[in-house]
Image (cartoon, rainbow, N blue to C red; front, side, top):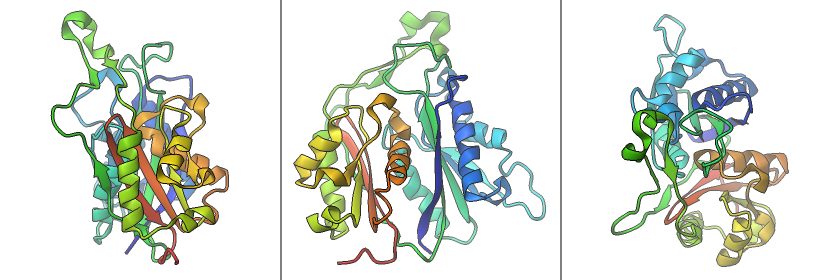
Amino acid sequence: MPTEILSAAVNTDPDTGSYIELATRAARTCLARAGVGVDEVGMLVNAGIFRDNNLCEPAVAALIQKRLGLGLDYRPGRVPAFSFDVMHGAAGLLHAISVAESFLFGPDVEYALLIAGDAHPSARRDVTDTLYTPSGAAILLGKSSAVGGFGQLHTVEPTGQVELSAWLDLGEAGSNGRSTGHAVVRADPLPAATEAVRACIAAEALTEAHFADGRAVLLAPAPDPDFPARLATALDLPRACVAGIDPRLGNPYSAAPIHAYLAARDSGRLATAQTTLLLAAYDNSAACLAHRHSPATGG
């Protein structure tokens, strides 16, 4: 049965700098909006990258699962649940969607809760040496015969040696290493994004007419506020069909696709859309995934 986006939520509360807390709050809101209880969710996937104290183990997904009280007890009437992390930079959420959908095709998982977002390792909101906006975001997927589900994930990855984009300098950090880190933006993501979107458009048999009349919408979040306009030009698409995020938000990084989805929904751009293209792009990497709102996208 095809997969549907049931609800989504973001959280940027200023009273905490903890990614785990921000993501937990977003997840609770997401479930409440869908009217789905934690006892009904069979899977939780975390795609966030920058987390509290540079945690490596246990999986952040397990920590969020514990805070939510999701599937912790195995008893009659409660759905068994499991959780894990999928780390793939800014594109992690789209990879997580593809993974989750493969489980939703089976009989055991009815709802999958996906989490993304980032925060400074120090969990402090007054730190200024960061390239990403502290936030938590969640999106709930479920089964539905009324939608067309997701299409194939199209990715573009760099070839050859890959330069570091985030690192921890142990010599510099000293005993405070768990609360420090460095990140850098190197290359314009436009070429990789253009290639990934073109592949997705071709696979979905979309034309310029689909975008011009609102049947198709492209969600294109990126740190550069001019990115949606530049991407529309590169793809020869109407500017109005390419939605980004509020430039004042900064760079929500791994949570960016959910921020863009909510912004497009709230602006009414998804009201007539039969196909929404979700894009994540960073440096020389990009991923694009189509979500079909109806069983057929139309001609």
